[in-house]
Length: 400
Image (tube, rainbow, N blue to C red; front, side, top):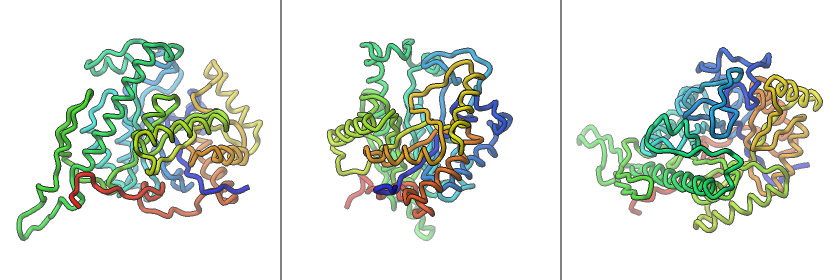
């Protein structure tokens, strides 16, 4: 079986793995989770597997097994390093793989983030992206004291109050992305002259006010950081509902979606494509990646046993917004290629146990896909945009 076109593959890195008891596995390195070396090792392994990019999870509050509340548990990993700073630390240690940290738009400022991601793009020589996320957690809002978010359980999301909050948060995220994108363009590519003989370092006429005025932000500009090497680093977002699907269609370069079968994948893709067309972006490239949590082993029973053992340690059966896959790399390849036919152009895999499943992806799944002609055998581009098949965009403020 061969794919109609090569797949794009990414890995979502989070602590010791996506299962809350993963840190107790023999392959885990719980003492290293807050070290630079740990993250460098993970990204190096992902690059060994020729993956398009890695994403780094982040949050503005402690992890929790509850949707919007702290759970008080002390038997699971708690605490994170800053995702943008991890990406910046590992960037010089890698050469090809994209680096996509998570940013919480609800409580951060787009001016700061635009400059941080632009800096990451310089440090990585054109391999930066970001994943925009919203937060509906009252405890995270309390860290900043600038807004109040009402308590809301996951089962109440489909109420009037839940829909109103969701809509507001994602409308704010759309404005956030727009501000960030305008700031990246606020310097023209040739704004820096750097002519020591004449004493001219920049051409002030090629720095632009963005003058953004919206419900959530008022930003003058320009940025203090010159336009990034990619022009526009790659913007991505997770979508598992109509409102976030609209954000992806309107504002993102990559959307991560969470279907549970081929029919659902096809329906989600159709909804995002419709939102993209409604936003006037029908001619622009937009990747839709399927998200899966994966527990892999050459023996499918062993993969199931690993998850079962971890469930026992956690005290409950682990579930996710995404499909939880247990099986062999070959079986996973079958599933990915089947879902590709529904319109997904790539996949972001969440290793259940990073110490085991990351290598199962890079050294098991990737060779299997290569044998089927469905994945690259070498990196063929210098920047993340190029790797994903995106052109470098023109600057919106430049005079032709």
